[in-house]
Length: 349
Image (cartoon, rainbow, N blue to C red):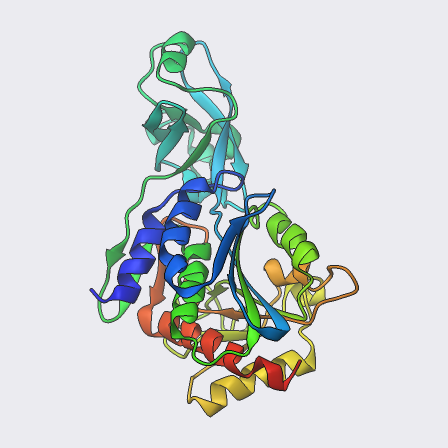
């Protein structure tokens, strides 16, 4: 296993639901410290790592949080009921093993529901709603669950570990957006001769409203910004290429527009900058026009009087599930593009 894959594995296996990113932040801080001049954590919990330079001021953003759950109720028998933190498809959660992040330490539980043996035939044809799911931590009563450390408001994340697949493919949880964090950290390592001031910002609460990006961009007031996130692909069964033209193995995507323009329409100057960085260094890339979700760039570009912003993303299959898949070559090329773009940003801004 090479160093880039080891970094992704460490970040993927870390846990940090939206609003509870401290464990991930510790990993990021340790990994990024050799490549920057200053590190600080702001009031929201964003980690801001700065490479000192002159103008322009470049903000690079990658969100640390992953989609998770939060306990909302413990019933008399000790079963735990929950809400979603971020964009889950309910069926993805059914029968998963979860980690309850109690103040006493991690506690394991499983998401249960009525077994098929007890379902009516018409019920078997319907998706199981999240309201019909619960978490079994092995407790025999509410009091027993509380003795284990279970409390209202406790966050939960998936109990899934990173694994290699065939060829250069790997799978794990939270590739959205630990893959983006990995690309940003590796990009900082790769940078050579950057004249600009670079703020690498590892943001919080992206999955629940782009919150950390919004506040950090306001505070830093950069001249230009670039988010590293992930793109979903259209290269596997169950999805058509017209829904996503992005393919694994063909390089990072450069966003032109996302959420049908409701998120970000990337300025032409930013697109020229990123394309030139790729073309000069023979980095393969794909242009993405998305109709689905947004990234931190959507919040950053609306900060203050407007900040020109773009997005670089490695293609990832099955995002927002425990079994996301990516190509390590795509991830490496994403990091290379971040680095090469930073090296020529002063030509454009």
